[in-house]
Image (cartoon, rainbow, N blue to C red; front, side, top):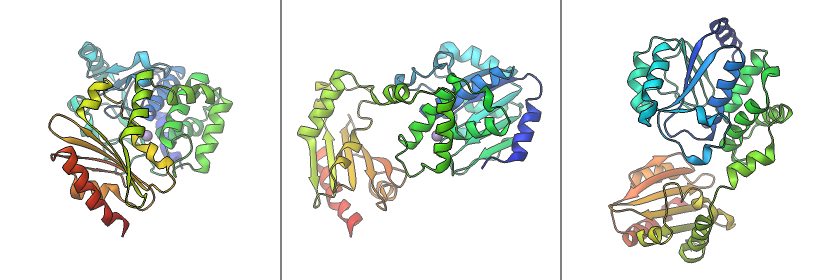
Length: 336
Ligand SMILES: [Mn+2]
């Protein structure tokens, strides 16, 4: 639920034209970018000026989102001067999908130094207390969903045009896995319905989010599933090991393994799925699990990593073969 006192405070803050800056978390995902660009478009329609600064690069797969060409990527030196100037002039700084100011990497010092009032709109746990207005609610599936409710709460639903609707829809489908994750609430569908009514097109967004492979990468997934997938522990555990020679063979780039770890769940019995990828000095590991199997704790305890209960990462300094052996042995304790 969006807090009405916060809405009133926000309306007061925005009662005259303001120079706004929006920032989000490093390596922003579709929700970070979609909600920020949707909010930027909304502020501009209200007569404010708004710039959106990303602390770092983001994946090129998100460039289709309308307005992405306006993002000031602070990791790209050519943007530093403009971004610094926008921050220096800022009369309000919005923090979207992001709630820890010190995690803004190279932007952190500039954000800490700014005296502009800060407004936080975010759905992650444990927000820091640095904003004059804090919209923080972990029952929201996506920041894009919150932005919709904030705009609606401010009485501005009619300002949501097809661009804003599409921006927000992109964030909403990304963070709910197209309405499949357990965070898919009745409010998610209420917001989705509103976004479609305001012009988002579900087939277009689905195509842009889901169909992003080149031929080489699809062949690589086929190879990984045919040649590399192993299923152990009575069908409960699956893993795929990608060696450096495989990476060379398929000319693997950053992000090419994204999503591979989820395929083993197509097998009915699999409850734990892992991808090992060999790098020069370590084996990088992605863990995914179903239900009560806690791969956050598992990765922390044995593989120098962590993350969420059902999705985590880790690493091993052993060889690939020894890493697999260690993993197979230790994974048994997850199923006792
Ligand atoms: Mn999010």
